[in-house]
Image (tube, rainbow, N blue to C red; front, side, top):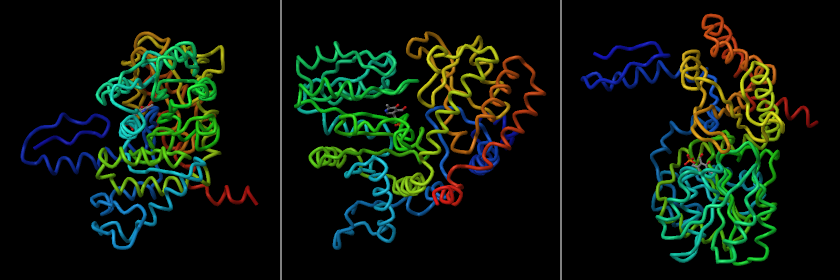
Length: 426
Ligand SMILES: Cc1ncc(COP(=O)(O)O)c(C=O)c1O
């Protein structure tokens, strides 16, 4: 029989007959820790209990193809009775993104990326441009471009500004698609500068993948790429946007929407209907609190940066306000060892190698999850103090402070403040 360990230190899985029972027992036991952990992984976030509940419904195992809810087209009937709820969710995304066309069928950011590349990349052999991974572009984009039979030109990008001379050179040789895929960045991608240059190349499409920053875009603290000249946008729904593991494509152009739909038809069949319903709930909720939350993300990211610097950490960007996104990059002597110690306190940090301009292993923190759970600037300062205690090996004091902080964060999640926000609007 497998030993059930404390939630903080799960046992290695065994292969005995009780494994099924063990899966349920251990997941249940660890769930309590997960719910109170302070998660600083910038690619992750929690969603509201109302949205989360959708994942455990029957709809997670149903197909739903009849997006237009056309009578006589219910070959798969499982989703029929709630199809209009997903429609309402798509309408909410449409209002949030100020985009008429919303495709909620991608099952993740990478799935949306594949659809965008396949739909907008042009004829096989065409040249597609994206941001060099060494400069913060997504690791998979170049390889996917090649798999789809295109040629790839990576372009450098520094502090959110793509190298326009490199881009112009590529555009002069003929490019079908510019795919802006900034992943690791403390700066916002300057889409306007790219679009202005591309004005001279009307046959080239501009697509922006804002998987990391969608919540900041839809919350209005980052400019909407569609307002800056991008023809389409794709994203994950689970990094700064507090939704499920799912994806999204939006555009204001009917022809672009049709191309995306055509590609999506063969790339996604099951769109994980339970997750699409969770995304719909998340979008409808976000309409009431999104701008407040998004502003708090930026405030908290800067507050955590400054507080960590006060405790002697080497935080990237001290000279320019640290960050314009949810990401906070921290260099320290033993990033993995301190990460282990913090994990035992229920605080989870993300270790990355070779972030742009920062060789070696360091922390790439994100404040979206604690922020959506209600963390304040004071909480960020207290969090920095706990992180410093863990670095300095002061475990018993750190444990007490961490559990007090874990209890405090999560008391007033943004999605529970609807009435309060409505009152402030009166
Ligand atoms: C720009 C970009 N595109 C795509 C992805 C992949 O998203 P997902 O993990 O949801 O598939 C990421 C993930 O970080 C990303 O930053």
